[in-house]
Length: 315
Image (cartoon, rainbow, N blue to C red; front, side):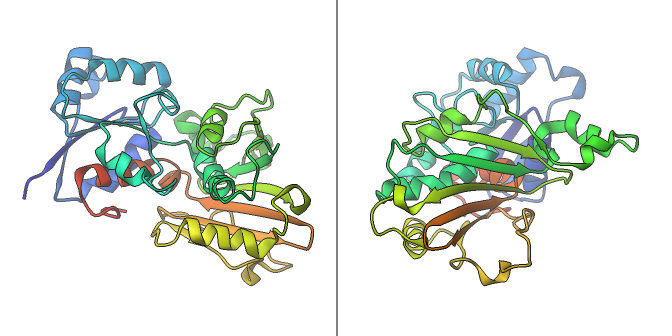
């Protein structure tokens, strides 16, 4: 068996560690590693980046741009988990389920931008509705995302897991209050929306799990739209997709007095899509593991596609 060479630049971070976990048991993958004392050695990083069939960048934006500049081997596929290249020309966006042709674009690309966790769920909700003409491109929308603290990286994880942590961390914490969250450009670019959404992310006192909710008024949508029409639009868009599950309308499993389980897709590479509706309004919700389909799982899925492996291998 020919083994694919894979290097994770930034392997100590949350996303990098999870990618290593996905790949460690695979017999078709050989992980290239860098000695801890040489992590900032540009020459050693360049050697490993150019030796790899696939190089994952789990780095801050500036460092990711520097890493891309080190890649001179035309055969190396770069999958960047940072924000740096998500709306950049020449980069394939790493949601294969986005639209017809996107899976093939990822398969052929040598530069793949891994989507953000919040934006993955938001795009999964809005792109089908825009494509179906249900949501107008210039419709102002708002979205709320609640996520586990692992999305904040090692520093935030340590903060929450500190035995002497502040009692303030026991409550949800809204952030992004300057209304300039780094995921918003890709949220617009890959839904087709022309009006910037109002986006409110919230960190909760749990490790992982994420749910984005978007409220919709039927009077502002395509005439004749109701909850059933929203479900049909999602089912058509995601027909045959193994990693996206469209749930029943106003899912009876979540009837009052039950509560929505934000962590219900944890330890999967799946997005669950829900439509809750009455005669006039709807709330659509997309749920995922922010470390799975929201980050590392999505990156491995794209790697599988690019290498010609089973898309679900290791996931």
